[in-house]
Image (cartoon, rainbow, N blue to C red; front, side):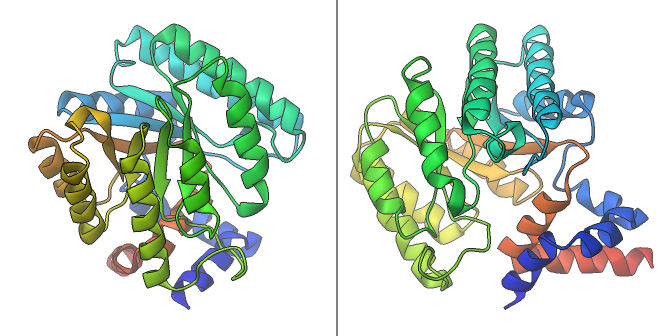
Length: 306
């Protein structure tokens, strides 16, 4: 019930206004967001890379409703890539791109061309891109764009969400050699016919999908903070005799940093998902919905500032 309430708030313009205008909100959000500028993104990336962690950078923004906004978002990624290149950081950092931020809801062909421009720039800079997955209504269009772009950019990453009932089958399609797939639980509000509603069912779907990816020939990117799922992933890696460089763990910036360091110290590849930019509201709401501990942290921060 709490999760559904928070996800509903993520779509409420009134709640968005109240939260984003509260001075304390920007203080709290620093735990989960690198900052508002490309300078912040580069600074945090360097800090993480220097401690042995890899990074995936997301310029916050989604559900773009104007072509000019899509062009601005695309330009932001191109600027970021140039800064990473000149800073010598592309060896440890890639990009995460939401297609709705670069025009998917306006015109899928526009989003595809913008994603192509970002992918070309990433390739020249010596890094790559992962295409984020969003609401289920965009899943087919997202997968079609990934299929098209992978003909030119075979290292282009893809995200699949375990709470969707279709995901195990999608994992089977994309578990081929060279295919980079990030598996996460999913953080959008979806109807019962499309997505599992019960946490245990989502966890079971995650494990089934994890099994498919680890048994396949691709490169699984296991996005979870759940200790039990991390332990299962570790067991499956041993079962399928996978070397540490044939898969990776992904965790969110600001969430379980001790676990990030623990995994890295165990010679696992760990990539931290680092968002930046001013459009942080929807992202924050999804983080709060994912873990009750995040809600408690947010409320404690509000109380301490009151």
